[in-house]
Image (cartoon, rainbow, N blue to C red; front, side, top):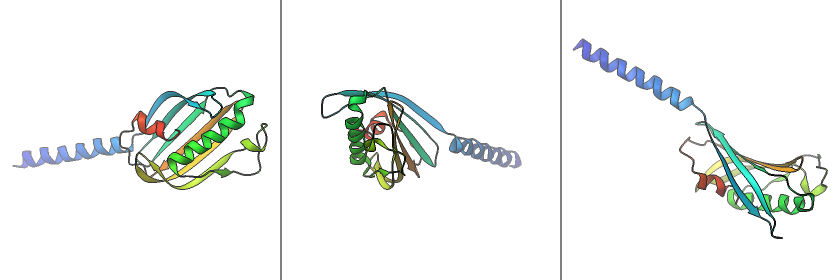
Length: 157
């Protein structure tokens, strides 16, 4: 009986070690490439990547080069699309303004929003980095379930 007890105890301990290691692991995904059509008809190419663990998921969308004549429109439509999907509104984040004018300074927003038909505490940021637009959505309290490309795309469409 002591051998069976020892084997069972060893199995439980090893199971806890393996599950604790898996619990603490981080994961990443992407890239997902897609295009966003602006109201004027310009199609802007973007790439989405993500990384996360059992505490939060950070999803980043980075556009290809945005032509100078499309920056204002693309900046605006990206903000609106992310607001529509997450319900988190972004406001100017300080006095820094990009070289494109007052339209395109860094934006930030925090609150409770939606991802994958569930509510989470979120932080959303948007800023021009040179001639590219970067949006980052941080989903706090994300439980680490498998993330689908479909759910990821919905954050920005």
